[in-house]
Length: 576
Image (tube, rainbow, N blue to C red; front, side, top):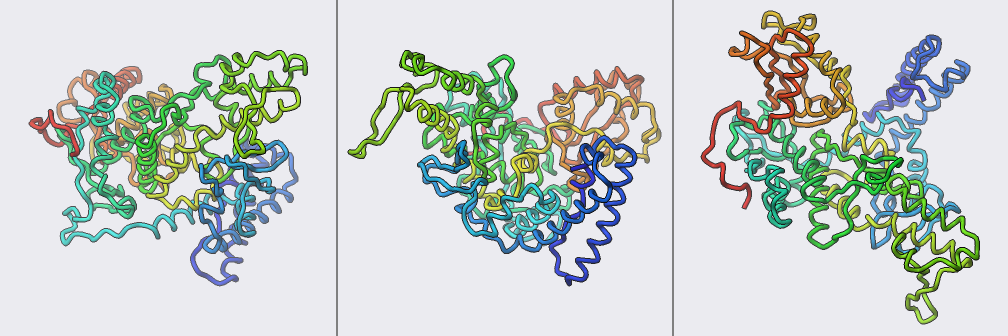
């Protein structure tokens, strides 16, 4: 579909008469169809294959989609989305595998004849199988209503400038959690001193409802929160920036690096492979404590989602599909481990004589399995040597074992996620939509940032047409995506932007330089207020100078000290 179709308004869930709904959608259809036809006439690049279709057909297709979304929007509050209906009923986890004959099997061997893999009530199955036709706006609107309905009430304070008693203060020490320090420590100390570990201890007494708290302080520029952060040894008040920084570090940076909850996928070390930047859950050292850590990670990600914060986890379809109730298959395995898939293909191509000549030791080293496991007449599991007759079953077992390896950790992650957000509603989304919902888009859209930018015009020389402002935008264009993410983190304490203009809790503000940076501006660095998404930009003399100063600032700013200076507690760790 073209971009206009994807953005077409969906049905509202507010109560109105059928006549009102029909009239609204007729007006919407006419306007949107006209826009689409204009785009087709102009040869708009985003219209893709629709450019080859007759205009009348495009209008009819749009009308059908609008009518379908109207009905779906009305039905969504009434469909059964219990976890057992959408995630399967296997006691060992949520992952299900799509067989080549179209059957869906769980890790315990149960199967379903439904190609979509969704069991349960007919209406639920129907909606789930057609989720790709439901506008994202329809889903997001319903999702926000459900998230709001499951929110834990916070009693407001008598004085609006005071913090409510229901919102606790959490003290954490980012200085002892410095990554370079953590890397030198033993695993137990690393976990204890990390921001992740400090947060886990500080929230250990929380009940489930505490993870659904949401409060917006009058001084926080629209940032929802469940707690207030106190950074020990850093001069900063939490008006949103420190709150966001906690999730950026504890839910993304540490689990992906020093804590090892996530690790690079096997493709990361294989030349000419795809998705080399993806990470997967580590399944090599599973324990009860490890699964609890993964569940806590799910809680952090869920709470971040509830408060419109993006946690930039770069996970593959092997994770996202089970989270939306879809089965995984060989293509998902290849997306993270081309080596295993290539070896399975090699076994498939062998002649019967070559299969008989295979060395079990070589098979064990390559595929971690050398025989077929079968249940005998005595009810016990037996090993059957690989042969041409059971080759297909051998390949199926190896494939299943690799596809289902993350079952325990992914189930733990979903359990934690469901503590903070209504997990039964995740299957409404496609895998790609859920990734954007929880993690945002990896690309920093400069045009989107410009749309939410306001300039401190009260300061002379600060406006959209000022030379140093133009240098600033050109410098951002000059940066690669990783550098742009660092810049967004520098000014807002998160590395990904919201997905649309209406999801920004506040505008991005560009102010004039601080008093000390007005003279000889090229010698000064920019500064930011992450709580208020604000950049103080000196009047740089060129794009290159602006680029260099920005780059130095975003790569070297590690603490928040603008509000006040308080160093006496530097040596003490957060939590208890």
